[in-house]
Image 1: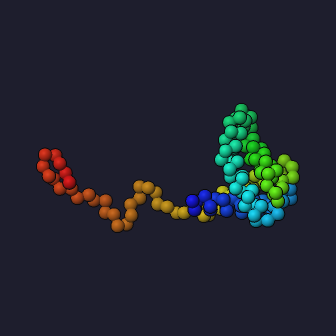
Image 2: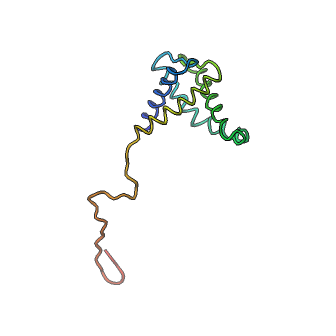
Image 3: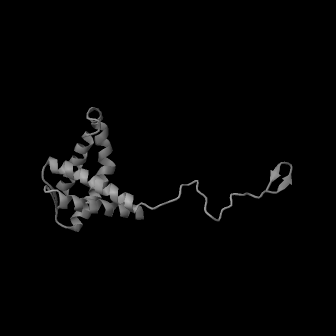
Length: 140
């Protein structure tokens, strides 16, 4: 649950940064950015895979660059549904989706917890298992 909240807030900050940097994107306030981030997250989880499959031939021919257009369309869709979040035109949407992806990725890397790999042992583990022979090929 905490991971989802952190990702939501990260996307919200990314939207606010894109609105600050790009002339064609306007956010009325933090609550509008929060709602836009929630809806954009849902669209990225549900609609984006469908769009990627439907446009696979074009995406292959463009060497994956058409993905930016898909992200821009999703951003424009969100702007049409959230009051206080406006994207004016396709190019601001394309650049905005690029900025949102970059800022969100950088923030996610900065906030990622440093976990040891699953195979790493804790310092208190010696790695030795002491078994006793009970006879008849039984060990305990």
